[in-house]
Length: 267
Image (cartoon, rainbow, N blue to C red):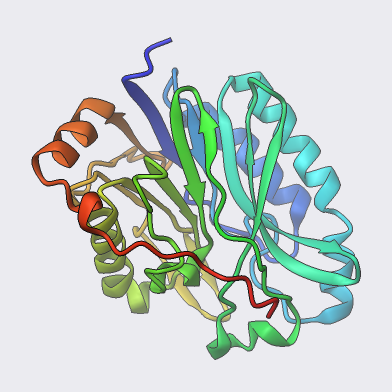
């Protein structure tokens, strides 16, 4: 296995509201458009449902998350690639916007609950915020991390202290109306952390706006490197470790970062 390169793709799914089976079928179909040899496939935030504010429906959907992750594990094994995204999930009486990273090599799944809930859409009224910091996931010789959508606006939360991760994946439902902010934030986070950022936005539309053409992959210098398939919309890129290492060597800003720890307040 070539640990100096890793191939990443984004499926910018046009999400059908509250329809896990239809969305999972769409993912299974679009996997056929992912380039051969892809190591990681990133899916949008809440890719099986879209945003839902109806509590009874939300609870029903949350109960489906186990079956959803089982299907994702099967797809991951079939294609030999990791799959990352987020789903509605329930635990201990709370409902979370839960990101996942399924590793087909080990068969394990790592989770992260969205920390920053989007107050403009009253997300805090029906979801609970996560308390754990973004995880560091070793995968095929690379360190991967993940946050969810609105988390992107908070740089301290996703700081790569001592170059703790090489790639950050951001499943999102980020509307076209705020597309400029999305792109600039991804560029800034890539530059300040000297890491590659994968912005896995959706396509289509819902009650909150239109989503189109914002999925992309940025290298450690903040340059967009994703190539979009004109038929499926799948965005793909090969990330070169030597490029990251050389950039960090020439401009070692990581050595000058403030040393800090995020204290879990339990909020």
